Length: 365
Image (cartoon, rainbow, N blue to C red; front, side):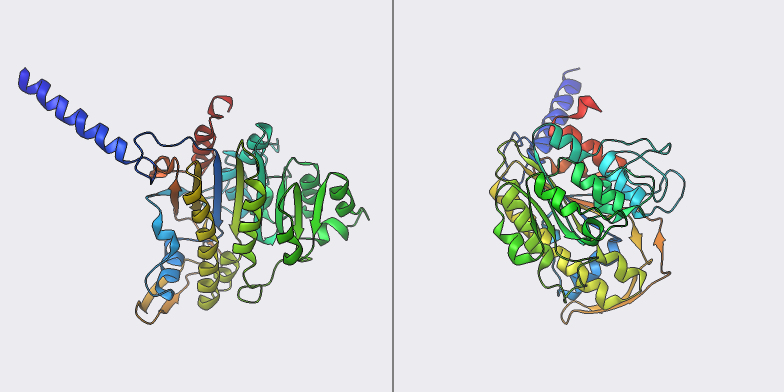
C-alpha cells in the first residue's frame, strides 16, 4: 500500500511540474490572465505553405517561436470542404455554418462573434486584412449576412458595429454603392478617422480608425510593400490604449489567392509577408505578458506539395493538386498567455470557445 501511495505521489508530482512548465513563456508558475488576443489567419495556409516559406527564408520563420501547436478540422455544416465564409464564421463565432454564409448559423440567424463579445465587455477591437475588409474572412468577425457576396451590406455592418479600428481595402463598398449612400461620411459621424493611405493610417494613434487604402484589394506582395506588418503595428498602437484589453483579427489574405493560381513564388511571397506581420504581434506579446497570439488558417488551398528544395539557397520546388480548397486539417500555432490551450486536435469552432474561456467570457456562451 505504501508503494502505491508513493507511486501515486510521484505521478502527481510529475504532472504538476509539467503543468507548471506549460505556462507562459516567461516561466511564471501562474500564467498571466489573457487580456489581449491577436488572431492571425493565413487564408489557405496549410503545413506545406508554412514549410515553403521556411525553406525560402533559408530555414527559419518567426512563426517557429510558438510553444504550442495543434490542428483544427475545417469542414463546414454542409460541405466536407469549407469556404472562407463558413471557415471564418467557425473561428469567429464558434458555429459551423453553410459555405458562403457570414456570421450566421445554418438557419440564417446571426451569431455573436468573439470580436462582438470583446466589444460588449468594453475591450477595443480591430480587423486588419490584405484584402477588402468586406471579404469573407474579415467580414465573419463583424458582419451577419446570408452570403459573402453581399459586400455592400457587409460594409454597412461595419459602420453599425462597435469595432474600434479596421484597415484593409474595400473602399468602394463604402463610397461607390448602388444605393448612393456614402458610408465614409457615416463613419466620420460615428467618430472614426477615415484614412485612405498608409501615411494617414499611421498618424492615427487614438480614437477610432477606418483605414481603407484600396478601392478593392491591396496589391499582391511585394507591390503593396509592408502594408500588412505596418497595419498590424498601427492597429496595436491604437488598441493598446484600452486598459481593459483588446481583440484583433489579422488576415494574410492573399496566400489563398496565390494557391488558387498555383503560383509558387507568389505563395512564398505572401507567406513571408504574413510571417513579418506575425513578428509584430510577437513583439507586442513580449512586451505585454497578458497577450495571446494565435496563428491558424480557415482552410488549405491548392493541395500544395513540396517536391524539392534547398534550405541553404532558399530554393523551393512545389506542385499543386488543384486550384480549389482541400479538406485537410490546418495548423494552429499559439504564443504567449494561455497558449497551452491550443495544443491538440479539435474543431475549428473550438478556437472561438478557447478564446472565449481565456478572456473569461465562457460562461455566457
